[in-house]
Amino acid sequence: MKRTDFPKEFKFGTATASYQIEGGIEDRSPSIWDEFSHTPGKTKNGDNGDVACDHYHRYEEDIEIMKDIGVDAYRFSISWPRVMTDGIKPNEKGIDFYQKLVDKLLENNITPFITLYHWDLPLYLYKEKNGWLNPDIANYFQDYASLMFNKLGDRVKHWITLNEPWCSAFLGYFVGEHAPGHKDFQESFYVAHNLLRSHGKAVIAFRDIVKDGKIGITNVVTKVESLSNDEKDIQAAKLVDQYINGWYHDPIVYGKYPEEAVNSLKNIKLDIPENDFDIISQTIDFFGVNYYSRQVISYDENHPLKFKHAEGPLPKTEMGWEIYPKGLYDKLVEFNNKYKLPLYITENGMAGPDKLENEQIHDDYRINYIKDHFKSTLDAIKDGVDLRGYFIWSLMDNFEWAHGYSKRFGLVYVDYNTQKRYLKDSALWYKNFLLNK
Ligand code: GBH
Image (tube, rainbow, N blue to C red; front, side):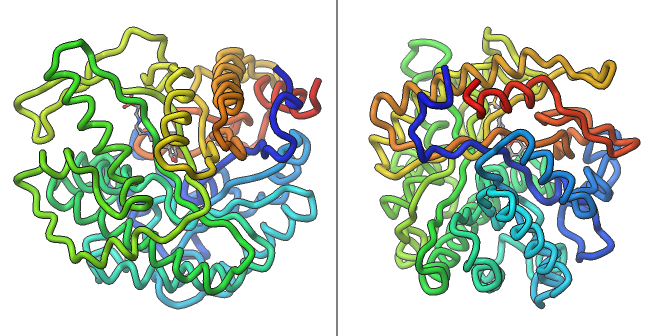
């Protein structure tokens, strides 16, 4: 498999997110992740993003590294509390950071893809305005999005409104493993809905401000399979697929939540004004797909959503996630048929048992993982899927949310004591691949 097997315009890149890499907290307002990670017991070893990869001060070096690897594109996210004090008032210093970042990327021929929200909600909006539970959040988000479109839209032509709203809603408000750590089933549905409304309002502003750009949304796309051929397991898996995948795609394309999932949620209030779906279902230009793994599901009477995860038999990454490239192929083909929109893989990658030895990291497992997922992608393209690009998660090791720094996803190894970066074998492999060697 060679780079030249992919379409000519296909973009190969890497991805990161603001809270996971930036540090530089002296120059911004706090976010819900600052508060959450500083609360004892919430993250592994009490790790937080105060310094992270110190990318805020080292972005030039990091762009040099990308240049060396030879990527076409870079997907990063903007920290809302950096560009707006308390998420409300524009902060020139913060905006200036992203101006410089974008200019430096363009100087190096790397196409920027911006994600507006990768989970770092300004703490003020959470504390004083009830965060994603308040329907007004969509207006705050629209103001923030408009500011960024105005400031960067002349140079940045690819925009992603939200990263994985399922995680914000389900992990943040029901499971409680992500900020703000609520455990309220009903709330998670309000949050999901307000996230989708916020997405829609940002798209409306975008069409007004950036006439020649593309905008989409990125979701975590999980392949869901049934543990057995038992009718109950099959039905449970089908519903889980709708809760994770359909819930965040159908309303955007079809203007409604998946019907069976809605019917199964008898105890949940979904009193939704009809015109909300007009906001949510704005025409978008692509779906971003973050693909990592699959879930194997069986029926469980006791869970509020009537399902349970089964342990799958496949080899797993350090996260405990099964390695399943075929799931990527399946989802791409399914999405192409179902939603008929161009697709980007906006994240794919793995955490590995990386060891720094003699300034090297021999991560063959990651090279194999990436190759196998490239292969699935190529198969999907051959079968007619309109795929435009592929971003490896992640450029460098970083703050892996509740897992802190204990999990390494990077192509580049970060020594957190010295902030020195080392190219892993996977980065060198990617470099050769991009040179078509
Ligand atoms: C992404 O989320 C995030 O966007 C990124 O910030 C993060 O660093 C990266 O992934 C790595 O974690 O239940 O066995 O199917 C990933 C969201 C949700 C994907 C849980 C995997 C569990 C696998 N993940 N899902 S499984």
